[in-house]
Structure formats: C-alpha cells, structure tokens
Amino acid sequence: MSFSLYSKAFRNETPFLLFCEYVKNTHMKIDESSLFFSKNDQIAVVGVSQNPKQFGRMVYNHLKKNGYNVVPVNPNTHEINGTICYNSISDVPNTVTKALVITPSQNTDLVLRSIAQKGIQNVWIQNMCESKESELIAKELHLKYVTKKCACMFAEPVVGIHKFHRGLLSFFGKI
Image 1 (tube, rainbow, N blue to C red):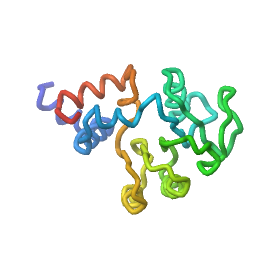
Image 2: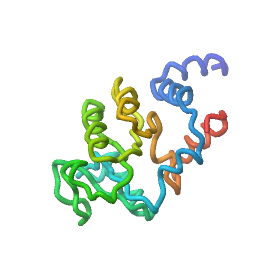
Image 3: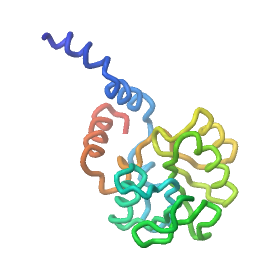
C-alpha cells in the first residue's frame, strides 16, 4: 500500500479525525493552562467516579497522587479513597477556588451555574464534557474557563499517552 493510500485510509478512522479536530481547536499555551493546576489552590473535581477505572476517577487519583489539593464531588457517594466526597459544588468548603468539571455533557451546564453560584470563577471543562451551550454559559456567567482540553495533558507530571498527545500538539505548534 502506498503512503498516500494508507494516509487516506487512516484519515477515515474516527480516532484520527477526533485528534485532528482536537488539534484544530487547541490554541492555549502550556504555561497558560498549567496555571490552572497549581498545588497551592484547592480544586473541586466535579464528576469524580466511584469506579476507579472511569476517567473522572483516574484524573482525580492522578492529581491527588501528585500533590494537588483536590476535593471530590459526586452526588452518589460519600467518600472516595477515604476522603469526604461532597454531594454538590454548593457543599464544598469556601476555600475551593477552582473546579474541574468531568461530568456527562448533559449535566455540565447545570454544574457551571452551580459553580458560579458558589462564587468559584476558575473552571476547567474537561474535553468532551461540554455541551453545545457550555462555552456560551461560561461567558455569560463571567467564568474564567478552559474547554476542549484534556486536563491530563496539562496537570504535571504529564505521563503516558497524554505526554505523547502533548508532544504531537507541541510539534504542530498548537501548544
């Protein structure tokens, strides 16, 4: 198979198309998005899962393991790994200054409104967790937000497949 035929076949694969779309929509510099992930700030992880194999739980565990001050939020559990898990963003301590949203897209807009009501201004909406209206709602609520970005590509240390993706985006001048 020639390279051009292989390229055409490969481009029709969904993961490749998703990655191309991700590269096209990525424009934030590493240092700008890394500012969100400060170990000095308390970050609510909204949508942390009870299931350790779910992405929300993996992100939470990665952040916690690497020294980030994270607060789990999930209405369906009272604790995650022995840490108190809050039912909603309105229940988290007032010391929480940022929120990482890893919820199904149909829940994200309501979560954004709750975050704004709580007075939290800095929000990261995990890639593929946003609805069509999420960005508009975040703007209307005057939130400082990041969207269409994977938190695992910016929360140091970046490891595994996320390090590879970050390297590709860097290569293409997108971060």
